[in-house]
Length: 107
Image (cartoon, rainbow, N blue to C red; front, side):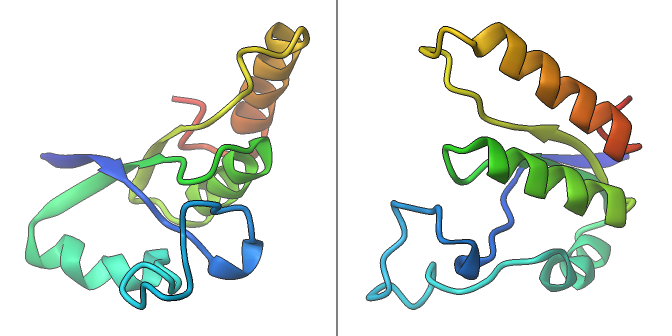
């Protein structure tokens, strides 16, 4: 089984991709699961692991929702502010969100 261990999706309208610029037409567009599905089949890739593309917990929750909706997503690498004095609690909350909302992230 082939697993792509580093996969990004993004929706420009979310607005938290500070590194993305409108003058870069290749990157400044949506890349969503529907775009990847035909390529997975062509490459005989069975599963992917999503990696956050924005430094926000909202991004991590967005990826959890994508994982819930698409069975080929088998994991999520999210983001949390490690400098926050509440980092432990925030990590625990994200783990609970991932396990509670996504079959893929509970594995």
